[in-house]
Amino acid sequence: MQKMPLTERPNWRDHARDVGFSFADMHGEPYWDETSAYAFTLDQIEMDIEDPATELHAMCREAVAQIISSEQLMERLAIPEEHRDLVAQSWRDEDPEIYGRFDFSYNGEEPAKLLEYNADTPTSLYESAAFQWQWLEDQLAAGVLPEGTDQFNGIHEALVARFAEVFETGSDLHFTAVAGNPEDYGTVEAMGWAAREAGLGAHYSDLDKIALSEDGQFLDDQDRRIAVLFKLYPWEDLLRDEYAAHIAGSGCLFLEPAWKAVLSNKGLLPVLWQMFEGHPNLLPAFFESDIASALSGQGNAKSETAPAYDRAQAQFAAGYVRKPILSREGASVSIHKGGDIIEQSTNTDYAEHPRIIQAYAPLPEFDGFRPVVGAWIVGQTCAGIGVREDRSRITQDLSRFKPHYIIA
Image (cartoon, one colour):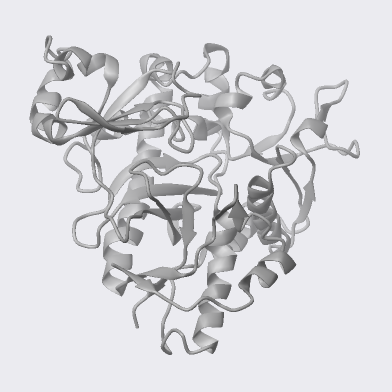
């Protein structure tokens, strides 16, 4: 894994504007950055990222089955009690999943380490699936990259195939996101594009325009019944919304399904460690309430957790990360080492939530930036990657998206 300086395409911003990539620059900073790219070997892609991500997703599905059958775990993941049956029933009904994104710390030498799973509403889909592929084709044509250079990117094709697998040709799907957010709309439009290629109808409606009919069905902004809804709106918010009470009786299939609420929650990480302790792609993780006394040196871990914590103690002594079970863009996350906080997010929007403690896996550093590898799951297999980098140890909302390629 290398970071390689490369010549930018001379008119890439014009192309971005033409295709509607309106968030290529955000907050006065570049978001898409092709002044360099990350280069991987084929073995690194296949053996260190693709295969482990597919395996981890299967493990996550095992975790869903365990979590929904445990009132204690549903409580620890803060799934609202009144909607736990909805979450569990969506799993029992085998409501289909479409996509998700694992975030890995990976340095090209050691096993990729799972930092978290964005299983419900992951963004950066358009730039991962489409814009970086166009970058590859343009750079090959310009001779910037040698002939035979490839990219791990079958994301769009996999989405088309997944929609075709789940829905009959001609089915109507609806897509929604919060109005006024170009990045969210870019993700939703990338999904709609794939659905249309799969022979499906794809209708967009802003989230605040969705209504409820007198007989309890969801309606779009043209009063059409919504039978299938892809919502770029997280379940942790939706389950606390007044409309949540109407979901079960609406006859509407939600994408991602309600059972994804337990995978997009960082409480998943200690559950995975409990189930698969020692897996090479997992980091030791525990609920903070179980190990707080031991971590501070003022007592012991809870009895059921103590043996596993003792086995992981050396890794925690080297550093750990405190994360709220619900958090986005690194909000309310802090990194601890040697008794000190070495970095913390200035965004404290999720500070009120319970926390988990995860062993610290430092991101590699290239030219002052630290990359996170996002491995995209479509259906149940890994279909491609996107790389974001940040100057901070905590990847936040001002991170940059970097293209990647496989060394020929």
